Length: 95
Image (tube, rainbow, N blue to C red; front, top):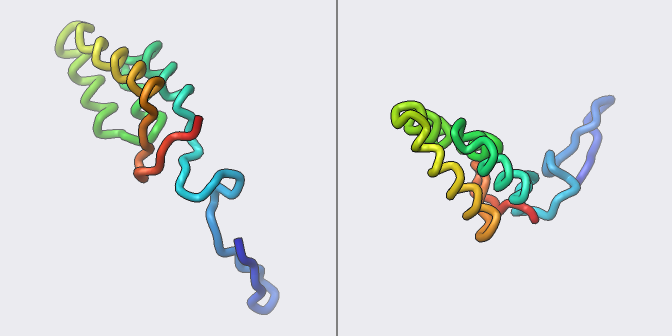
């Protein structure tokens, strides 16, 4: 991260997620997986990682199938725990 001055203002150039390695998400794959398993009906795991489109789709499928679509969220959560995943910006989830 570089800093510079412009008159009396301080300008900061760099990542807003300064404690994480560049290219790695600030979202945890463990949290995303557990949320996906527990709240898979609502698509909450996908909402957590920023994948709103898939989260809404999981919610709609679960409602339209009277809850049977929540299996999708369960499997999705397990796959995120096992294989990891990416956030909405395409960065891999941190461990």
